[in-house]
Length: 203
Image (tube, rainbow, N blue to C red; front, side, top):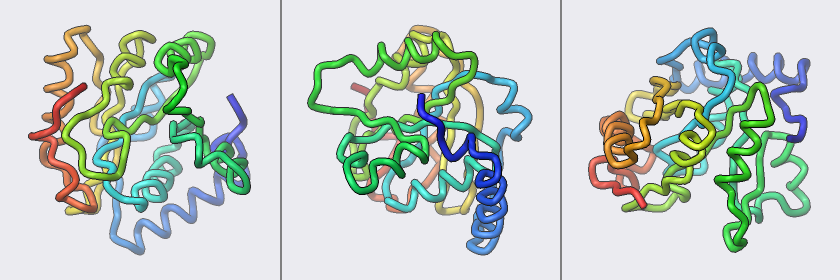
């Protein structure tokens, strides 16, 4: 995969300082697993929820710098066209063509198998709009690659964010998804009317 901002030492250190200042100034704090605890896991699929606002991206990016993560994230292919395509890729973006028949899950599993370290961010909701279903691609990626799911969150009500825990799949997707969604049941997105983990179903 391409070299990203997270592998650019000078800029990475600069962004760490900027992120700390910006988050403290706006009242945000990190919590959950520490950078050292996360570093013990060389590979994982990181799910980011709730995803209800454009503000989720910059805040998540700042959390990544503070937690010393080196991550890739998936997004619709239109975000990677000229003139911002290079920037999206440098920030760790991987374009996904939602109209194509290619198997994103299998491609991601293969990427995990070929690398010693890899972290991929996936938004289960797949959109900032109101959802009634979570897409389960992230689950199949993690289970197929034999890597844990990092349960990350942004709680706008408390202005707290981080990775709560690493979840190891069992293969029982119904039970596993129920446990994962239970973790997010008390977390508030920026637009609370667009996310309610207690009513979200899988598909």
